[in-house]
Image 1 (cartoon, rainbow, N blue to C red):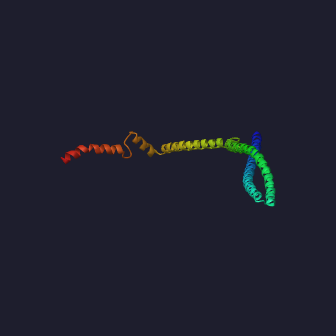
Image 2 (image 1 turned 90 degrees about the horizontal axis):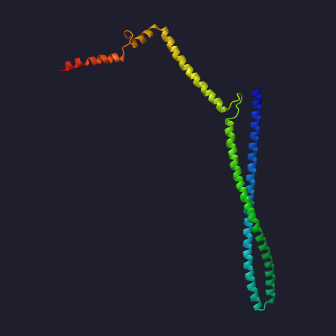
Length: 227
């Protein structure tokens, strides 16, 4: 019962851990998507700001051109044309003033938004590193977590199996040696052969050492014959 309780508790804890990791992964992806959306929005805002600056340069160019033309009209006595030019200049100057204020205000906003985005990107990178860390730690803990039935870790189970296999192989080897010993005792011819090899009585089989000794003893005779 205690083992079953431990198993159920471990399973519940593992389930909660998996759910936590899954939620962390979801929240990390959501945060990453939010940061990407903010990057796109900021890029568009910067693009619009560039367009406003381009429009401001165009207004300045148009104002300079209109003023020059209006002066020429006045010099030529073309009062109605000069007045029409003055009206256009007044409209452009109002647009220029409003655009300059908007650009200056948005520049300050963009500076703060860019800093905020950089902090968010830094936090997101730290979050991703932390997520990788907890995933690796979770996998390592799972490798050492409770087994399915024995209450031991998978590593401990494998180590026990290896030790059991080694003991069995050693036991089989010893049994084979004992069997050979028993078989020799049941076979008188094998015992006689073993005694002969040990020098107890005449050897049953021709030994290599005896053949080599006989060959060496024949050497002087062969030398005399050759002379």
